[in-house]
Length: 160
Image 1 (cartoon, rainbow, N blue to C red):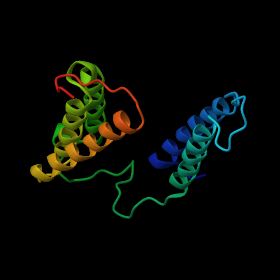
Image 2: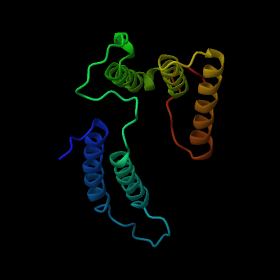
Image 3: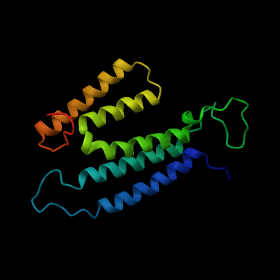
Image 4: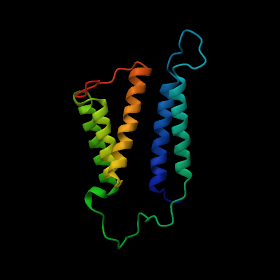
């Protein structure tokens, strides 16, 4: 029997998560009036998509240059903040800070700071393009959600 690599283990965990999510999605009650798209459609599509991606991740062959779990590498270690698990922790902390600052600072400023900050942290060095893209995407989302769809988003420090 061959040993599972890290992608296959993650794929199995994601498959279990998606099966549980799909089980909950099938319990969403149908809307009383007949409609072509009901409230349970999006969760079911999301669950099946996650399950399909988990299968693809499980079947993916490891890359040729990918270090094996048993092998030692003589390459110098990356700095602490650039290691894969550190990136996960930094991203989680950034998302927690975003959630805490969303109401007092506002959707536009908090979302722009999150996009710009994580873009810079993950290595994008064209700061003007990063800021313009972050601000453009966030403003488009904000205006679409508030003006077109009527969703309330916190304004925070900005006057609109």
